[in-house]
Image (tube, rainbow, N blue to C red; front, side):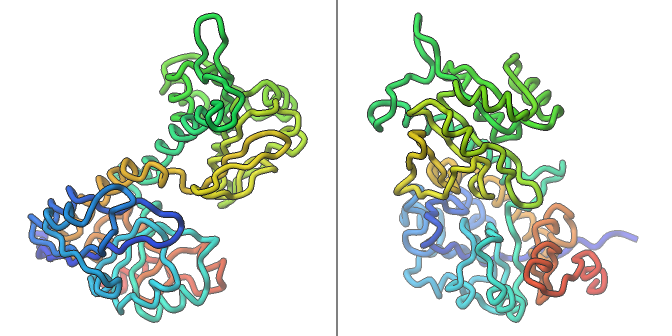
Length: 385
């Protein structure tokens, strides 16, 4: 018997303007929209949706998108593509049986929002949980690469006198030693922070409790550098001499381990910089508290702290292109699969991101957090096929 290929489906996509979470990214660039429109799909964009990334309405209209002024007009689309989490206002705008593809920020989720979405039988996909064919998380990796590089560039900025820093050049010069950068965490963020710091000429130390991650980082960088497991006495000693400390630890059960105490921060040099990239999940410095892109820093024990969540939004055009490069082929593949439901059936990596499916909560941790019934997506799809 021959497999019957699903009939290709014309997509109707909506891209709203982000009004919250200090979000400046846009999920699809004009170039991606042009590809989709040229393949017969309909894309509607809210006026000003791309301005935060310097993509303007005329760029989208020239790409073939329809520009609308009303957010409610965007939410008439069959699928909504967002670069920021869903808000309570947007839950009210969503139509029954729509698909929404966006990030998810569990700490800001509310049970009544989830209940409203389940009543509308929404298919909700968290794009940071999407896996590719090799089992990696492509959007998380791209945003982590950006966050790691941005952390070092941010630290270099706040070390300068221009921002009331100590007046240190990160890479030093002949006869003047370079700044010392200490990175806690050897994942993707830590790797790209180390890569950028080394590229600027800084001295780099990396701490992590995973020997495998430390070995992988050394191999990926192609150079030998100071690496160590996280041992409190040694970490405290090295922090005393650090000019920059970057927190890039992976979360454990959704929360970042807090391994740098107040006493350790208090012993750091005055004017040194802490960039806590892990602040999205609580932060790994005891002195960290969330800041914003408008007011990004504060001082604690004369140590400058930069604790902005969603660092990638600070380089929104690069981040937008990275997200768009991943989502555009997926959207086209969903059209070739007969729609998003067909793509979910075919690809386990897409199913990994689905947390709501036609009235059911299909993500176990979310269901447990809000005391809602959990339904296994694979079993659900098997009963519907």
